[in-house]
Amino acid sequence: MMAGHGGQHHAVGGPARHIPVLLDEVLEALAPQPGAVIVDGTFGAGGYTHALLERGASVIAMDRDPDAIRDGRPLEQARAGRLRLVHARFSELADHADAVDGVVLDIGVSSMQLDQAERGFSFRADGPLDMRMAQAGPTAADVVNRSKAEDLTRIFGLLGEERHAGRIARMIDKRRAERPFESTRDLAEAIEKLVGRHPKDKIHPATRVFQALRMHVNDELGELAAALFAAEQALKPGGRLAVVTFHSLEDRVVKRFIADRSGHAGGSRHLPETSQVAPTFAKAGAAVTPGEAEIAANPRARSARLRAAVRTDQPARAADASIFGLPKLSDLPHASKR
Picture 1 (cartoon, rainbow, N blue to C red):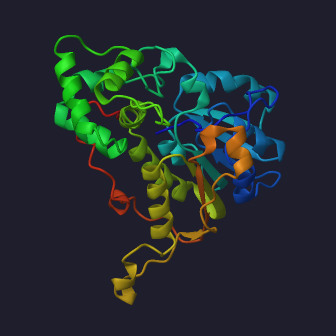
Picture 2: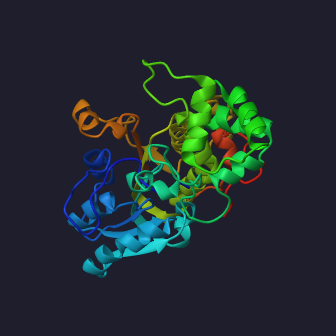
């Protein structure tokens, strides 16, 4: 999922033009020591990786976006022996790392992806309706033009929390019969024409639909859930997990995982004492959000939330996605599959 960063970043191999979201707080949560091995599951533009390398850690950096891996090669060469770039989804991190000291995940689309019109993540500039982080598989245009109206309603409503989900889905169904949607601007303008836009609106009326499409195309919630189970396998006792999210559904997944794995899941108090399972993680404090200064410097940080946990010496449990209570969207056509 989601291999990308939600905020702004260091330029790979160059000076720090942008700072990753909650960088100081992430470093505090990971507490990297010289010689430690940390997995950066969402390499993006290399912001966290750069900071971890500066502190003497070795980094296994992953990204599903081939552009991110390509752009990171100069940094990999400059830090020969201490940085390994892996072109893979972060749900697969346990296949590439074992007994590591830390795992950091920064969930969501990267500034780098948003700023490239040809990737189709944003409607600020017109581009193809694509949104694929891995640049492979079905596109957002495939979802928009081929999914049933009721399926689009579920996607927009559940993943985008869009209150006009049904109206927008019916509009799309009617319009695509005449002419398919192919560009970001075409879809955004059609939604704006239907819903309208008030001067006081803080976001464009198409924002939540675009968010929902991106999350669906890239199976972002499913990838996050799988990545958390993979981190549980890859971290050694005392290893640290730090996850930055930018969306309430993502944060809920992380919160429920840590609660379940640390023995604080809701409802567990009703189970017999004998059924209690030894915790595989210890929760590391409350969720952390950016301060006013960071939000002022980087407005994209506004919705960010960091949750952290420390691995115990108990063996990893079986992956059970039911603990997350995720929306049932995996049965919809054109969801990105591994």
